[in-house]
Image 1 (cartoon, rainbow, N blue to C red):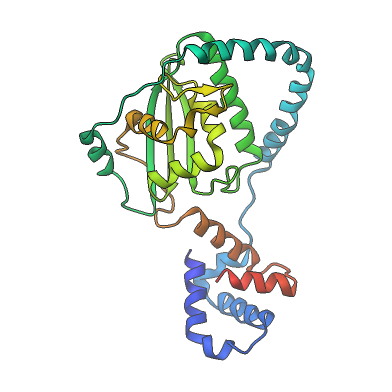
Image 2: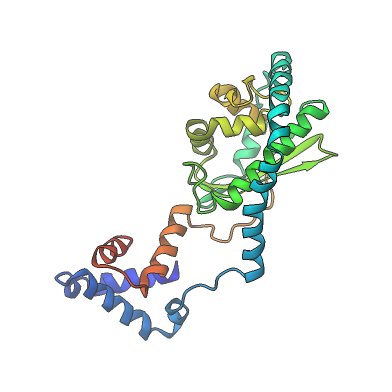
Length: 281
């Protein structure tokens, strides 16, 4: 963010002189400006990569999980139809909650929101009774963890681009679950983003919670009942009294843009890539 602000201030001051130059020459002027600034010396090198051991473990995890799943495929082929029948029977007996958050609770929640570019969200819910739902939720969270660990790790969760942090955590011997998240904008837009783009994912996880809007085959229905889903989340939401943000004035889009500016500043870029890089400013 400091790098971007310094470059944009430089461009504002030198705008007239630079306006007739080609993109490569403008970028060369920016490079010289940064090189001459001792306080921006860190921007002349690439960020340090993650530790080698961390990368080895990530690669091993990426490979080993599918290999184990392939070995267990015959077992899954037998178990999945049985699981699907049991799931559907339970769904038919589920009783959705009709509770609505009261106004005092909503006012208390609102008092903790909209102070910076991001907002926190914390909720606690009861897992539906029985080992079947506990096992189902455990397996789904394992799959979610694998996906976000290896494929959705660049600020884009299947089209949702406002999440800074999110985690589910079992408590009370897996009888309850805490969900915590930091996100850009308002809670209303956050919920709408998920409903429009990732309702099936919400259902797969939250659908194992007691009182959740009725689902079909775990991924259909549920969050598509927009009002019932929003009432459900608000009813289970708790005030987030303490939370951490490394960049409280920046959105995920800002962070991505700033990272791309630094990465491209001294990289080898083609003329077209140089023009696209300048457009970030």
